[in-house]
Image (cartoon, rainbow, N blue to C red; front, side, top):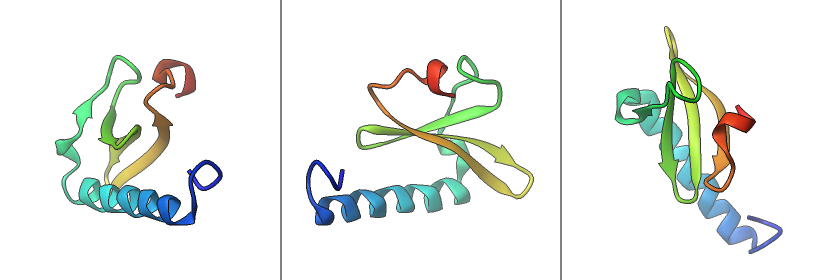
Length: 76
């Protein structure tokens, strides 16, 4: 985002992702299961990106953040 747009837009996107991480940590079940990609994984949409994570005994573990054009089964 920084290279293509500008620092302000990049910071805005980082803020959106950070807010999503906090939301998911507090209520991970709001994200849909995506067992067809990997068993136990969940995904959550933020803008044009998908956050892939799993629920752990201590909270959540972010696995990867992919652009919506990227094929999850190939990159996870």
